[in-house]
Image 1 (cartoon, rainbow, N blue to C red):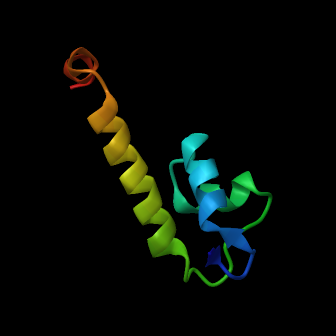
Image 2: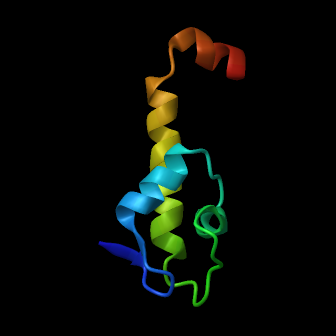
Length: 69
């Protein structure tokens, strides 16, 4: 499914960029060599980043989280 219609970025491509370490919604575009245009994709991309971060925190061992806090 397309997330960014302006640049043709799909949900799978968003996931790939997020897993590669992008931290901001416009970094997803930069990952693919483009720039945001209309901004309609911002919410969905931010949601993907937040969800990835939430899952990464849940997957971290307890000792790692204690050191990070």
